[in-house]
Image 1 (spheres, rainbow, N blue to C red):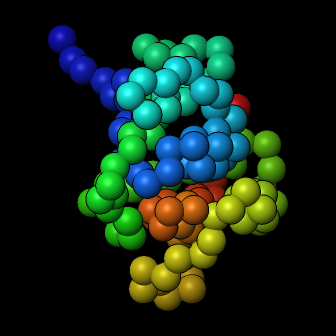
Image 2 (image 1 turned 180 degrees about the vertical axis):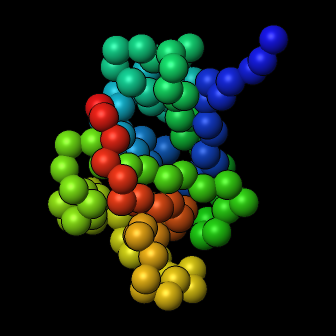
Length: 125
């Protein structure tokens, strides 16, 4: 028997802000709310589906910047440059973690400063 990731929990100052941002990035919808936390996930599957859901959990002391674990995203219906423009319009901003400029990915930060990467490879939706 094995386990799989069902949820990712991100402590944050403003769950509403990040739920809106990450829903826009991933095409997720709000699945539920409990004690100030907001769970988002795929509209067709939700909790228990093949893709993990994300819980934005309110915290008075959220960690920002370089997390020990970060999220990588890939475009599914456009090239990397077009997806970068879309993510920046949603509120992402470039982040500097010491890149050389020759990487095939972009390091970005969400509206609370949590870093994530936009990879080049286009995936099937």
